[in-house]
Amino acid sequence: MTEIAKPIPIHRLFALGAVLLPLLLGGCQEGVSESVTNIFTNPFGSSDEEEEVINAVALNPGEVAWHIQSAVAATVLRLKDGEPDAIDEEFDVVGSAGIATDENIDLSWFGVEKVQLNDFFHPKDMPAINRLGASLVLVDATGRRVGVSFVADYELKDEKVVLMGHQWGYMRAEFPVAESYIVPIAAIEQMTEAEVRDYTTFRSHILTHAVTVGDPNAPQDMAEYSIVTFFMDRLLDGDKVQLRISEVKDGPEGFSDDSRYIVHGNGWVTGIVPGKFSLAPDKAFWVKAVFIPKKKEDGFFSGLLTSEKVIGLYNTANLTDSPS
Image 1 (cartoon, rainbow, N blue to C red):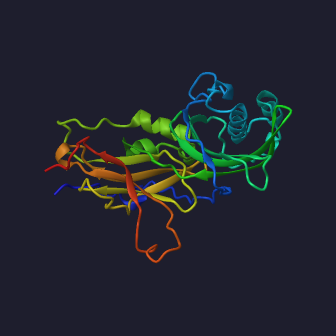
Image 2 (image 1 turned 90 degrees about the vertical axis):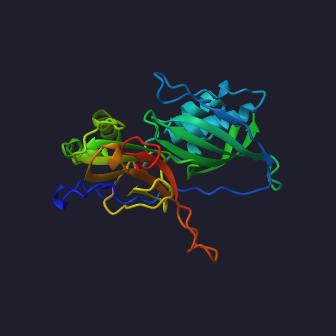
Image 3 (image 1 turned 90 degrees about the horizontal axis):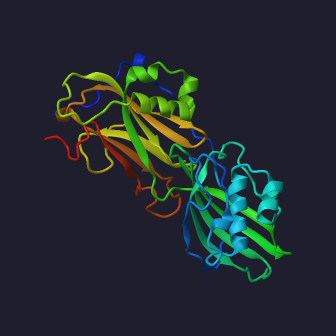
């Protein structure tokens, strides 16, 4: 039987616990709408460019009206804590100061990965109002992502977008992503707590010290390592993630008692499993990054069903199947 990750003695455990803070949520009004299904990739540039470009005019005006472009651009820039007067002037908007920002999260370094326009219609009781519903996926240079959905109500006056109301909230990733690495446990122990909690510093350190796996001649000797998994998507309040180790590739089952978790930037989680194991192919095991969405409280079967799913699968010897 494969020997899986002997736990490090308790005095060696690198235990950094954290509790997810409640996240800012915003409501969205419902209504029968005319569907707008265009999906645009990188319309506002990306945060990994030398000079970030926020330019809604770059969207095809034949497909999307200028006022929709302006409403989307104002939302993106306010989420990034842009200055309202400058936004209003550049995009012919009145009232972008009314778009809320989240003081607990710094999105200034995030660019736009995707914009999806979901709804655009005139409410029956307010025919002069344009109601726009859209969703955004923002990404930073390291690949961390956050989803946002919003509804904007606005009028058109004197060729300007006059915002009358705006609501937004974080949304769950449609396809969550996780990345796993193995580093010598000493590489983490040499870091201070402040360095570990700083996401950019911690990630850079892990990538620098990550060991190469998949060597068919890797020694049988066991050594002290840490498995580090970055959950790349921001979690919503009530959602959970787990790191599980297993001899079996299929399914979400596995052992998670030795897993530790760090919360970076109020919502992004990193999982760590310290242990003593070999990187030899015949000693290989699986690391499963499991996403567990918040349970629905209503419904007869709500407490019986689980929708947890494996969003990342990593083998300690880079195998595609379990060792025989």
